[in-house]
Length: 186
Image 1 (cartoon, rainbow, N blue to C red):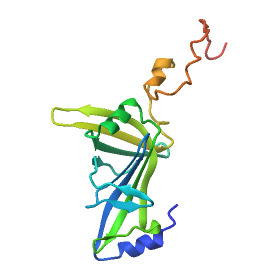
Image 2: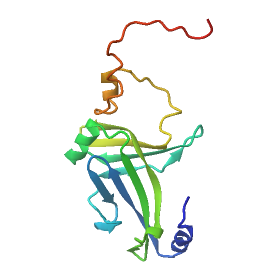
Image 3: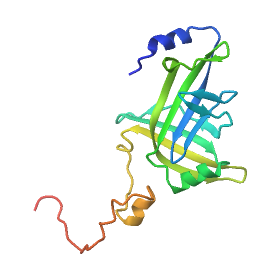
Image 4: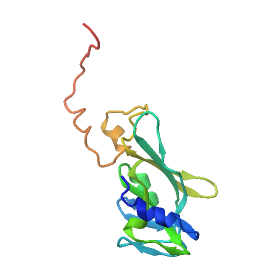
C-alpha cells in the first residue's frame, strides 16, 4: 500500500517534471545504480551514474496468480557481476525506484520516491555475442513460478544448477533402494 500518494500527487502536478530510476541489487555484493546524470546519495547509499543497466522492463502481472514479473539486462563489463550471475543469484534481492525531478532538482525525500518493484531474482543468464556480453535477469514477486511448468531433477547435481549452496537433496540418494509406488485407487 502506497502511503505517499499525497506527496507524489503534488510532485506530479508540477510543470517542470522529470524522472530517473534507482536500481538496488542485493546480491552477494551490494550494487547501486542510477540513470541520473551524476552519482547520488539516497537512503545512505551511493548510487553510481556509470550504470551497467542496459534495459529494464515495466513490471507486469500474470493473469493466473498474484505474480509480478520484472526483467532487466545488464552490461557484462563488470566481471564481479558476471561471476555472481554465473555462480548463482537466484532468490537474491532487487529493488527499483523512480525518483522525480522538479526543475531539474531530484526530490530525494523518502515520501517523494515511487518504489515500483521489490522482488527476488528468478533466473539469470550470461549472453555472449560478437559485440557484447550481457547479463539477462528475470525477477518475480511474490509467488515465483507457481503458474509455470518445468522439470526439476531431484538429485544433488540437479539442485546445484539453481543454487550452488543448497543441500536439500543431499540425502535423497543416501541409502536409497528401489521402491514401487502405486498411484490412484487400489
